[in-house]
Image (cartoon, rainbow, N blue to C red; front, side, top):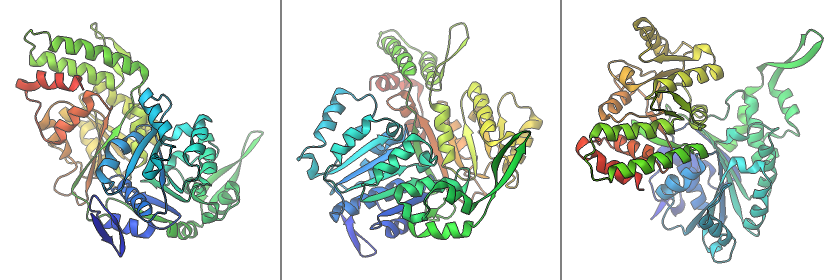
Length: 489
């Protein structure tokens, strides 16, 4: 369907919110642009609509989207199917380290004449740019093409010294259009902006080197420690000037400013399993299927135990029959930290397992400081619980993270200081999910609330979250059949 965007015609599949419409209108024909839109404000849709406009008006024939692990596959599975108009003839390809035979065949076909009749969309893990293998393919893929390249979660290239940052900046020089997307463009300091804007064009900030950029905007003090001397950044300056420089090439919006957002927004963030996790998962899955198909009566507690074992594994550990906890290499905690980097303000983190709550708290305190995090679970005394709530609810207090399980903290308390809620793991109880969601979304909350579920793709994780978010109970009477169906996917 053709819709009108302030006199700009092109096919739209989903109706934009007002702030998305504003972002698109400011950027649709620009060669370089940054979508600095807080997580939950729909920056992915804006980029997709921008790609659609450029393709519709024959400005591009190819789009390359670079994103972190766990994010780039989400574009194919969710964002593009939901938002890219069916009127746009397109084909999506994925580049990853270990391609299947089918994926390899598809990639080879992507460079041919037949494929070029569509909008070709290539999804790449940002880590791939630290290797040489990707460039040989990209040279062929982009040959004689007008292409857009976008970096999703662009703070992944904030380190100007990183190999992948240098490689991406070099490759992007040939692109006709460049876009960067992130909810938090400045994670540690304003100097984070340098490489993100350099990726688009050195002309935007107009500095010949990072060191000249740093000299202009950082306050540097020479520090002596014994016989050693070094320069230390102690503050920042000329930030209003920097803001004026980036304003023409960027659009910034937070959930608080996006007044047209729905009260609740649900997002899933994919967590890729490690090889060891995958091996254990398939083993447990095989024995579970055999049990459920065995013909014997299987009780609901037995089914729940099977689900529990799978969920523990997806969180990074196995519990042996003797009760010993065996740690399995996993990406869940690192994904949590990546998600938090995209957020502003206070965050509630729900995790089913005591072991994970302690691990999350330790990690957050290590990154954000000892005063950044409070916990609220079985080990927490009543006095500590009261103090945790008071600190978290106080907007002047440095406490930013409230880590709990739904069984302990999901009922009877108010946590509306937060507009971000992350489910590190869910339990199987619908009431616990509904009640825990409402700790932030209740009387006194004046802003939309974002709910992020961490899920391992192609596992029971996905089905459990869908069931709970859709407010469906895991009914005992059908649980065995349902889990068997999930495991066979």
